[in-house]
Amino acid sequence: MARSSLARISVVGFTVPLIAALLLMAGALIASDRALMRSAAAQLRIDAEQTRVAVEHALKDRAGTDLTRAELDSALRPLLLRAPAERSAAALVAGGDTILVTGRRAALRHDPHYAVAVAGPSGAVWLLTVAHGRGVAALRTAMWVLSLITVAILGVGVIRERRQAMRVSERSAELERLYSEVARANTAKSEFLANISHELRTPLNAIVGFVELLKDGVYGDLSPRQVPPVDRIAASATHLRHLVDQVLDIAKIAAGRLEVHPETLVLRPFVLNVASELESLVNERGLSFSIAVGASLPRVRTDPAHLRQILVNLIGNAVKYTPAGSVGVRARMVGASTPAGSGPRRDTPDDPFLASRSPDVRRAWIALQVVDTGVGIAPADQARIFQEFEQVNAGPRGDSMQRGTGLGLAISRRLAQLLGGDIGLESQVGKGSTFTLWLPVHPTDLEPLLAAAARPGAPVA
Ligand code: ADP
Image (cartoon, rainbow, N blue to C red; front, side):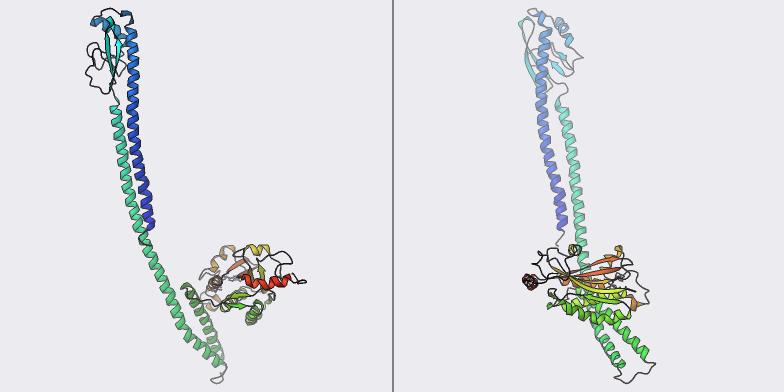
């Protein structure tokens, strides 16, 4: 990613709403100011009218008489609520704010003001000018000052937000740089591991090969004293080669260098072949071994080398973690359900629980299961054992031949995913484990089975 688009978004995300808020505030301020002035003018008109009515009412008995200044003052005195703030000629104040001025338009300090004609004594017409002693000017000033302070605070907020966003942007750029460095270092590590493992394999293969030749007596018979150490060398070298192979595999997978060469396989002979290689191991441990892989299963298109590696690892683990009891391999077809009589022949009917656990319930799968009655795996450990170097109750470091690497399941799951499937696990501590390898079935490989099932008299299991 170029310089943090995330940070750019956050800058835009903060600044644009704040600027919009400022503009809205300015608009609202101007509108409120206008409304305030309009309402002040309206109030002024109402005050002037009320004053006119009050003055005319106070003078109504004196209509047609000449009044002295003193008489006028005393006639209007009831209207005087408190000392006038301003008066001229016969001016009076009604109400705290309202100023009455008689005569022609008087010079008033107050602005705005409003003038109404009043019928005065002796038929005179007075001009009543009304203004508010405390006008709206102070209110408007307060409103503007407060608003400008708010705008200034918001402006400071915007600037701070922008600075913050810039800091986030710099931090994101730094994190991105660190991430790409880590990714580069990880790739370099995988490359290094792949190279070193590759370099180790050649001499290890030589050691294993020559030890076998020694054991076979090609270089002369071994003395009875020489046999145990040579056997030990053979076992250790084979174990070491296995470890190096695992490290090489994981490094290749991490570097994306493991290739898949698919072939079309018939599962039953394939599984029987792999199982026969491991049979001696199972017998050594005194376990019973069963294989239930139907001949009528559809063919699978997969990489036989990867499939073999997964199976060997799962069966090897089952044997390793089953002190007594049995180990079995079974295969079931899942997810290609069709109405009875029209679907592919099944060795076992669809197991709804198993079907619900397939990687994609809309597709057809073969569930190849390795079942044991061994120590089992606690629910808390079931996810982590598929991660690299994760083991449960690993043995002591010195006992490395027994200890394993914790890489087998990680490699197996990644291989299964490379093959378009996955590995699932069901286990109960003390009762045993079932590892399920999901292999996808290509729709065209289902067709022969569907055709066979459609023939009259075809057996449907
Ligand atoms: P390794 O066997 O070399 O330790 P794996 O990746 O093959 O590494 O297995 C990881 C861990 O998963 C093992 O250490 C073991 O604790 C647990 N495990 C694997 N298979 C089984 C099984 N069939 N029964 C019980 N535990 C198992």
